[in-house]
Length: 99
Image (cartoon, rainbow, N blue to C red; front, side):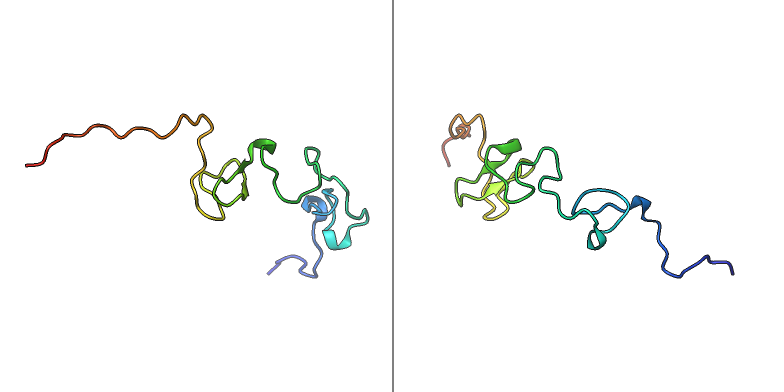
């Protein structure tokens, strides 16, 4: 069978280094070292999300900062506050009077 060369040779053209974000090598063999700000939109090169930044929201129950995609807090599971908060909605007036 001609299974090819299994001597450990790899095609590094599609590999992306997570230290410098360049293609062609793994992070443990990065010749460039860690970049201060590898992602153009980042302000600190990672770290905790900041409330109000990129749609992040602050949980009123536990003060955890959540990413905008979350509809409940990932720490305490409290629901995301409504941005157009107009107070609590009223409960509809159901049929009254029990027999």
